[in-house]
Image (cartoon, rainbow, N blue to C red):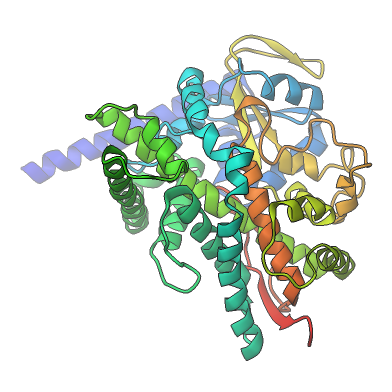
Length: 488
């Protein structure tokens, strides 16, 4: 009898979901007609598994600077108008999209990013966190990280030397993910993991969480499908692993602080400060600390690794650009191994190469804002309560903003070149721009400078140049390279 009641309950729940879906779709059709009556454009495309940003680019070119995306009864406005981009992203009065970031709060029932610095939609809550975190990203503090950047990059160079000597292929994205994770765990949390040389569950856990995040965003019913249960279990375990690790590291640091020990003024210390100085902290404080631990761990590893991997891809495809970058590195660094903070400022062409990489391959390409009242964008009246979507991937590949947009040309970012007007924002814009962007570009410059100083590299033939969207953009092939010493 119990089994019958259980079956009846779930059968009734399924029927209710179907009826709600039909009602929502019908309402969306009545309010905002589209070619897809049942669920609208967005739902159909998100479940196709494609790089959605290419579809957004296609729509922008077809329909102009403002276009509408239907998703059930919701409407999202795609915007490529620089004036509107400036108005909305530079102003604090337009909050982040609550519906989107609500789906990042938990992953299949386990708290994920929660209300951390990236996902907080309440401006006052975010502003309080941002002010506390700022000291960990000051120029003075970042200058002191050069030793760690150099040390961790040297570990990568040692591994590449072994591969070059043995003439084995290098899986660059995998190696770069390890070195960037090594950097963030050391400089942000004070942990020496030596991930380039040692296996660790961290890279796999982060990748699993990101895949789960994308699945949760793209398919509203993903978690209700029987076939997805094994993967959902993996995602839940990965989230729990990251948060349990964070709980352990935070506890040890709090004990050190309470005992009056000398602790670094790093991100972990700032995370603890965000909970206040009280001996007893609340469950809400604990959750927020873990939210920011997971946020910085993922943001500090995945985005920089993908930028470096795409940069290597484009340098290998454009040997003239690689040669010019190597000449600059030789001129600035010579044979010295230790790169100084001042050296980074002299590597101007390498900086242009990294910026051009982000134009074509922004790690976090899209962002959204919610408008509470009616506005006008490019002559179109936009009702309040709608979500505005901005995509630097789309803008970066449009001919009206960048001539020959698919050509990799670092001279677009020459100091004397005309600067793009609010159509290039790989780290977002305004008050909610990425706190760690300078950190990330310092790290990227150190790694690329050492790589160009010592090695020539070429892509193994036959691999794909497709882009994989796993919440951040990454190269689908993994960027497999042949590595050789420059003196050979």
